[in-house]
Image (tube, rainbow, N blue to C red):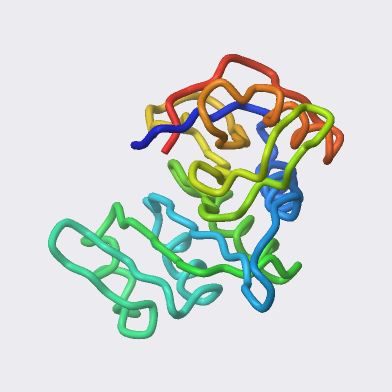
Length: 190
């Protein structure tokens, strides 16, 4: 964890709405010309069907169980073998902001015990009316599923905006850009 604060801007039990808000919030950031913004998706999967579905949706993803790591393309097909590897940690990197990626992320996260969508390294634009310069060092969006911003178990799902400590005005401004607001105190960010 680093020197940032994670402000909650949206809570819900519906996975699709959390993913949608996270994707919308990421689009509020700026990127260098020619650069692409990506999200990383992590989840714990405890069912064979959930693992197989995740593999089919993200064949390039990594699946881990204790000391065993598999790429989706070499994950065992046998249900009994897979059952012996549960629970599995799922990790997909560089998910694009396209609609297809959004729906695939939702399908992986719905059965997950916990999960996270994270986007770091975008630049929050200047907000002259709030006397805020662009910020790129402590920025990001984190959507947490059954965990908080620091990966502690909680009920429900939350979208956080990560900003420099003390910049609640920036967090509120970013949330309002997508029709939301800061809904609670900040947690320790990255």
